Image 1 (tube, each protein chain N blue to C red):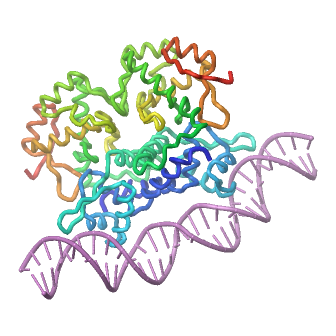
Image 2 (tube, rainbow over the protein chains, first blue to last red; image 1 turned 90 degrees about the horizontal axis):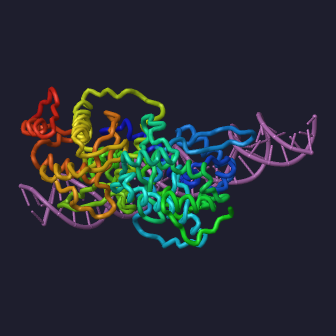
Amino acid sequence: MTNMVSGITLAEIASLMGDVARANILSALMDGRALTASELAWHSGVSASTASGHLAKLSEARLISMARQGRHRYYRLASSEVAQAIEALMAVASVGPKRHRPVGPKDEALRRARTCYDHLAGRLGIALADTLTERHYIVLSDSAGAVTDEGRRFFCDFGIDPDAGSGRGRALCRTCLDWSERRPHLAGRLGAALCDRLFELGWVERIKDSRALAITASGQRGLAETFGVREPSQVSGD
Amino acid sequence: MTNMVSGITLAEIASLMGDVARANILSALMDGRALTASELAWHSGVSASTASGHLAKLSEARLISMARQGRHRYYRLASSEVAQAIEALMAVASVGPKRHRPVGPKDEALRRARTCYDHLAGRLGIALADTLTERHYIVLSDSAGAVTDEGRRFFCDFGIDPDAGSGRGRALCRTCLDWSERRPHLAGRLGAALCDRLFELGWVERIKDSRALAITASGQRGLAETFGVREPSQVSGD
DNA sequence: GAGACGCTTCGGCCGGGACCGAAGCATTCG
DNA sequence: CGAATGCTTCGGTCCCGGCCGAAGCGTCTC
């Protein structure tokens, strides 16, 4: 009976995540967007009333946060810590008995480019991380990362302030294991800022009802010019 | 019903960690040592038979691994991924409604120096990380880290090969948030190697029935000379 | 070999909690 | 205003899974 203090609460948190419906809710929120209660009910495969109960529990434990908007209630993950914990659990879950190569057909869009909580993942995420590493703007040592002085300048030029919001608690530069590519990509505050900037520039857009991203025509150009990233067979609705 | 594939297994893992007894078992194993079934039964506060059931489930899910030794069975965490997931959950758990400042009297030993899975934590862990950073042997950017070329040489001289076991999957250099100091310290393969080396040199020793460490007389000297680390009022049984 | 010890398996008990449908509040729209 | 929509609360059902003690099996000791 050594360290009960945090132990008991550890169990509470894990238990919250350990219900299938709630895990589905959290997974659905892993793309960083806010979803309504009924959307989440659909994602988790339970009735609206049951989902509502789950959402109340998750809110009370501060795993998710809620914002009223008209007659809707939008829920999102409460913090990047929560997202990290879920990531870490997924990493544990994804090893072990490899169930089946999920070569989904429509997964292709997800594999190409998607959001992962608040940063970019998929082949696009990997390609950007590779370019930034090649040019020594960032240094990724396995699961860890740091920004170089050169990199700092580059990001400033690109419209991102690497030092913005250096409030404590959130890593500037960290990595996140990509489930499709099985390689680390750029996460942390910097990853989030880069993702935001790409949206802002109109280089990527969300595909409806999905975490997948479409690369726009201007995005094609911009990514090629600025990052030397070139995705073949990229067709976008834009 | 988007990404069920990993979602369902995420819930299984979290659910395993979400039982109080099992969470206590995992917490007890967080110092990286292997413990017997009966020790774990005691730690988790349940009967031997109940604990045995929990251990079977945790083993089957590959969260822990077992080694027979005479009539004992030693259990340990199966991988650093599992330890990281637990850490991440603790980080989520430790925020929120701050229950009570746990100014335990015998916690003092833990706060001074302890193991955290397979690396060093507490004031000793922080002090070492600080020195290594000051001398530019490592670069820690919030939760991430990297080793410099200088650092590589230093660690070699100190009897640690930073490139040993660069098998994939385990980060060489990462950080881990210290619950007592609230600051990051050195984890990853390098953190583990450093910890091992300190044991090997006889600079630190485990305190019985605890994750806490005692710094030996030779450790006092060595840490002061090599790292400039000086802990006041350090009394050791050695 | 007999006994002590460590651990697991088995059988039975019991409570927590996930679930749904119906009813109750809000909010928006006609 | 009344109707439709989004969400939550309530009441009741049901099953999963944690718990223990007793018994079984393997290992070490005398």
